[in-house]
Image (cartoon, rainbow, N blue to C red; front, side, top):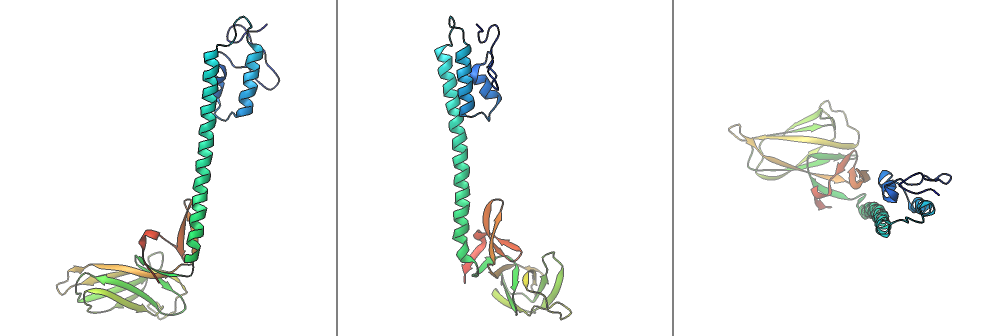
Length: 226
């Protein structure tokens, strides 16, 4: 009769009997083994052991514990992945009522939609000259607005939706830059904000985010719902 771990070992069709490392060695070599594979290896090992030198109980219990830990770890990973997916789905449904709402966000974006678009910013102090440059999403200048002197605080500017040549631009989301200077030519800080219409919910790196046209809005940047 064959012995395990000493002379030779017998095999059953489709199953290889473990060597001196036992079932624990087989498991460490193949992390994808499941419960059925373990049971097949266990039966094979028990059938092929030497009756005069049966498998040590301590090693048997240790191998059972190792398999149990591996099986529990696999189930925990699966439960965690399922929980993360459910949270993402739940968050996505939570954001759906935001579609169609107007939000004020930090940043210099303009939502052009069948008419004049409004852009806002706050000047740190009075400025002698203020220039607003409307840009497309690639950063190309479309229109320059020279606004003259403006006082400190919040400012609102209307853009008629036309480029420098008077051509009406298509609906969409644009961006802008504000260049403000005082009477001595020193820079005046302008903090831009935008009022955008939420057009949908978009998955970004597995997380649902609000979308306004081609742009994705970070929920932490939302200042006010309108």
